[in-house]
Amino acid sequence: MTVVADSTPLIYLASLSRFEVLRSLFAEVVIPESVHREVIIQASGFPVRDCVQAGLGVWITVRSVGEPAALPQLMREGRIHRAEAEAIALAAEIGARWLLMDDRRAVEQARGMGLSILRTPMILALAAKSGMVPDLRRCLEQMREAGFWLSDAHLAAILEAARETK
Image (cartoon, rainbow, N blue to C red; front, side, top):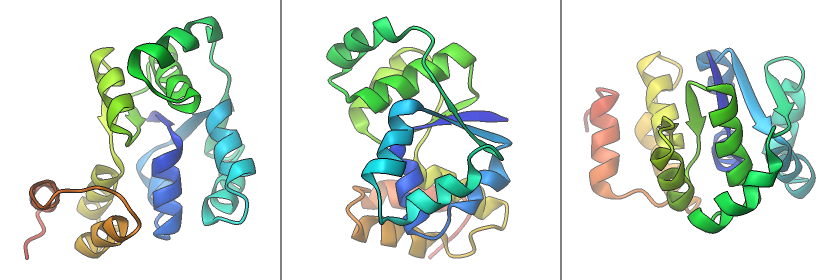
């Protein structure tokens, strides 16, 4: 299954040392050029850089958006950054099964276009259901500690979806 990824899921999964779940869950992860720049050049010194570089050409592919002229309008309408706009446009262009994305505005924009979204906590929940993440609660708590906003209600719902109880 091919998915398109924005930067934040890649960054969080790498920082949690859970980047490998992407390869296990998805046959191919496609990232737009702007995301590639963010995670390789701008994230120099962070774990995500090495993780993405190791997967390039193997299970991670960088692709250009076919209609770049549409990006400024997408950015204005959704009040989103270029990398998010490229990820949304690319997911729509290639008919990706999922768009991996966390930013609320970008998620709303993508859903408004009919795209299916997987946020990082749900990626971890899928991995937990597959037995790849035995400590889902701890991973989600680490994400919160790193600045990911996740309400108690959402945390409980994610744990329930993964059938993990207190």
